Image (tube, rainbow, N blue to C red; front, top):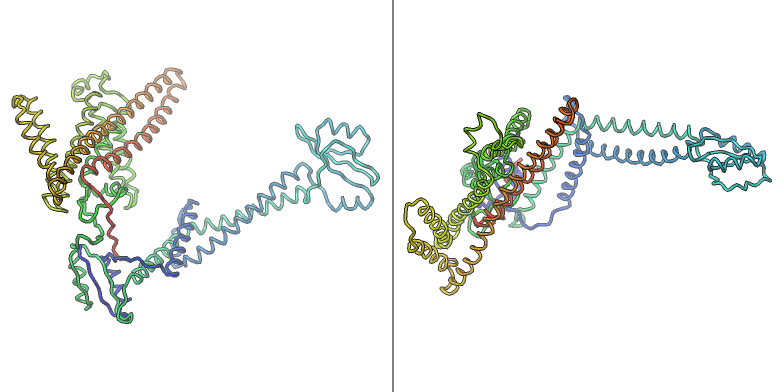
Length: 593
């Protein structure tokens, strides 16, 4: 990366910014500045637009081909806000009316006007709710009683009384509904119609105007980026000289140099210094680029560190396959993602490719362990499989394979750590790590040679290997310190590394455990399904197929989650630690349209 300083006259500054925005290669260095009210307002508008777009997209209305891209997204947003408010008020009103409707329904149709006329004639209509027994008691007293409606437990009735009569009933007297049932029903229907009309209008907006709102959102974001760059510009010479700082990747240096020369812009540049906060631009091949989103979940590498994506990608793929460990499931991943790719957009296709690679690893480990849709191929009596069974690995061998893969990744991580230390601080700082590699690899090679009868057991060779490695570990753990501090640091390094590596290695057993649990679940699903099949000649095959489908779908979902999370943990904890990865890098984000 190169750090550039641009010096531009204030009258030419906006044009300069527009030009470099079109160029899209400068990562502008942001300073600790207070955002203006205008920028805050734009952030608020973008947030509101995103909420409205999300609200409209959830209506799942098919987009119309006749798009009105010229429409003002802000007006559309405000219109939707108004309709949302109206909808909210109408729905609250409808809810209240429905409560009144429920209360009025037992009393049917009546007129407050008639009740008023009766009252003038000293006749009072009283409303009661009671049980059938209480109603009969009331009837036996000789009153004029009329049932309006009744349910299984309650009777809704009225009693006609004169002014000098008193109702001495042990019943619940209620006030008559303010509006009769038919009138409330009409009002509810009107409210529902209004709600339906607004919903129809919102559907039309969702089908027609989302692209316009997206366009407005993008325009505001572009304007916001422009304003933020201006805000991060230093002003000198009575605010007539604009000074902008930014980072340019080495591969794009010639592009910006040509532009500056053509436009006669004053500038100077320098190479990145160790103390600079330099943005990171990852450069990976097509395969490892698929795994960048996984690495970014933890952190981008520091500018001076090595990017570990290309190194952890093959391991992650293998570990996922080890954990899921069913060749049938892997084939589903490959075929399913392949079919979806035919209709998927450009942004989704890399994720589908990643799924296919993970599926490929699952096929490999499912084949190695002899598992296909929960069927244990090792124990299956099929003639054509007999010749291949010797290639399958039983659980004991799979357990050892998990530890071997773990050991390989840990030692590989130490090699990367040595390269990282050499790159960042110089080779002397990597000697301690080299010492550990001598100890670990030397010991492994020594015992392998003995087991292969290549050499006879000779403790002198082993002591030489351990002494050589131990010398580097004890005296180069901290090259800048004095001799006593180096030894103290080396002893602490021995303690922490020995205990750490042992714990890290055991952590890889999870690969075996997850693969085994996935396979066992598959076996159990098949076993239960076979029992269902034999339970009935007619319905058995139907429920057999349904259970197999649901059972394996559930197993795939559960096991895939674990197969993704645990390799991620092995990458971020065990591998990153042994590779000396620190992270904390800032992403390179060029100022562009």
